[in-house]
Length: 362
Ligand SMILES: [Zn+2]
Image 1 (cartoon, rainbow, N blue to C red):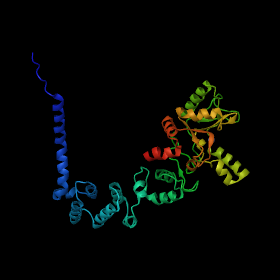
Image 2 (image 1 turned 90 degrees about the horizontal axis):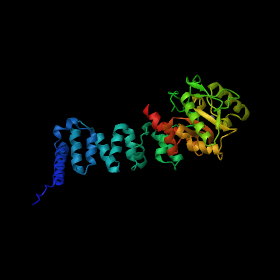
Image 3 (image 1 turned 60 degrees about the vertical axis):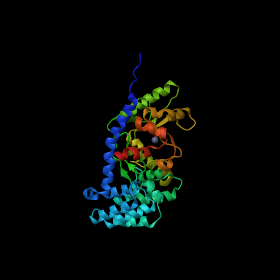
Image 4 (image 1 turned 120 degrees about the horizontal axis):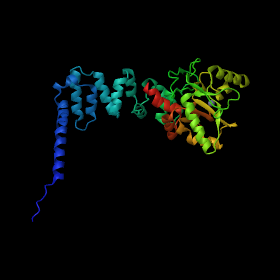
């Protein structure tokens, strides 16, 4: 018996898909082309960004774009300035994103100054960063000149953290002190009356309560006990030597240092009242008879494992220029697992995490 040849279904399917795609795409292509060439119908809806788009599409010649701009200008859709800026920025080599940004955000004087210089590659790069704030542009440039080994992205992050200013200059009050990702550093402080309302007493198994009762916020304490329990299972022992501190207590500590060594030295080793993370109820100083330090197996364990419990080593070595504090191997901070994991894996500071992920949302 002769076998009937089966139709080639695969080919038919491909042809069908191709036809369907063309049915969708062709009108789009044609309409766009027509939009530029038959302006009369479209001018009422035309914005300068469309001109900028056309300038960067190989479909259109520069003459076509210039004609389009003339037409828009005559119909008072764009000004002569805009027309000049677009053409000049384009011929200087600026990309589409930059031209749109400049037209939208810069004042006449600023555009003129930009146009008087050769193509500013840094500017082009700066504006692509999420944290970029044009009002701070001058500060970025100055900070970059003083720290020329820094990546531009880090320049923006640091200026947004205020790090181009002196410590305790231009400070802000933390608006969400109850958030587990609140930021307290040398530019962000807590109200002197702030006391978390969910502090719990720490058990003697987890804290040295001999001088006074140690307290932590509930969530931070729960994870702290889990961490210590797991460490104990592998023979590692440590406990809280210091945890929550009131504003007044921090003030006492700070002043006693000032009396002993003066304000300049004190500012290098102790936070001013209101600027201590211990007031958040989320920070713990660890000890095992001695405070934890490099080389101690307790420290090495904490360094490797704390993030699994939502804690980070807050002041790491070589990060002083971001945190404002020298290395504190004993000081950990609860920030929750999500933040702790990210900070651990990317080897960044909490300050950087905060400005990029927490502050931006507000
Ligand atoms: Zn501490």
